[in-house]
Image: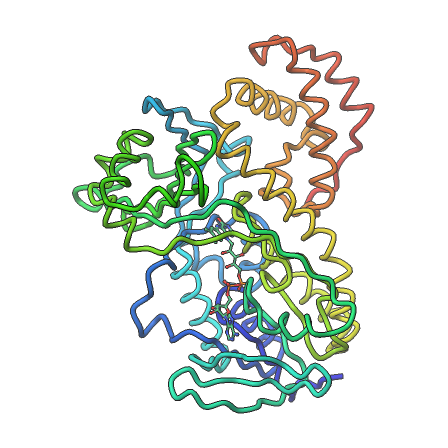
Length: 454
Ligand SMILES: Cc1cc2nc3c(=O)[nH]c(=O)nc-3n(C[C@H](O)[C@H](O)[C@H](O)COP(=O)(O)OP(=O)(O)OC[C@H]3O[C@@H](n4cnc5c(N)ncnc54)[C@H](O)[C@@H]3O)c2cc1C
């Protein structure tokens, strides 16, 4: 058992690390963070780290508890729905939720990370930059650290270590060497590339500001999220190989021709598309599942280190911040009995993080392909109409995941049940008004118990 005078060591000052550090300091613990990168507040950020994130209810809940959400509000842009751009440049807007309160919030990953690091340091957390964790002796609790500037290595003693070191976690690497550690990683055949739409004249957004823009093209897609400075952070998701793929983008002309043919309305917005394209690396996307997440009371994995997911439900950090909420609730309940806290944390989270990992993969098909299908749009409208009639029974899957804190596992199961109901009700109609409301009532009352909402 660790007393409050002992130091808790966090590996990784990305997003989960500093948020957790703020909360642990507030509870009186000494906290140190080791981060392999230089301090991005002092060193120019490397290309490929300018992704925007969509923060929603689970993330907002955790930030509010930490007293940070009011500050974050200044650097977010609410997105009320998806703005679809067809191949012929037609626009269709599809709201995310039932009203103006159900929005997702675009935030720059770098700005969020900086705000969280500032908050952690204000609380007295020491962040050691350019200190890469090389491994951990899980018996003694000793960490091996390398100073990335000088190349020197040294051991750091620690009683409790929390690996917040992302999808390629070194702490998970140490756990992998143990007997009976379960591990799987599944890469998508798709990569991603960050691009930017610059601000228009007077720093104005060149396209609708309060929307997440999607250019769905069946097998691939482009998305754009607004920034407060009038720019849009875009991500192109494309297969690594095949007809329209990263392997074909070998020259400036190949990139320009691809954009002119597939995303004609983007070309005037992004005049330097080829420069943009080649300035950034191509990222890969992986789902990581593993267990157990903890070793005695000495080490725990949290966030992407425990469960990296693909980005298509916009839940990676929302899920990670929810991890922090659950861990802190258990800590408040049990005190620093780390073995108990870590064990119960994994029990509470593992099934739920597995569920969102699967939902995120499924949502890729929805975003790149189905959002352009009129039958899908009809179902979406029908979902919202049913939610208005049965607000505690029929909550769309997207809303359960994004606008509520309903456990992901329940959201997945209910989502499947609701999908079957929607399939039946939308089978022979072309307009929501023509739905068989009597049958809807029978199905919903017969199959869906009221949800516990939070
Ligand atoms: C293209 C893309 C789009 C996304 N969009 C969304 C979205 O819209 N909404 C959402 O909720 N999530 C989104 N995500 C997911 C989100 O970015 C991650 O879930 C989140 O960053 C995980 O936070 P983390 O703190 O666990 O890990 P990270 O943010 O990866 O931070 C880990 C930190 O640990 C450091 N580190 C790594 N190894 C070591 C080591 N050995 N020693 C010391 N330090 C180390 C790293 O430098 C890093 O700073 C997206 C991800 C991608 C790739």
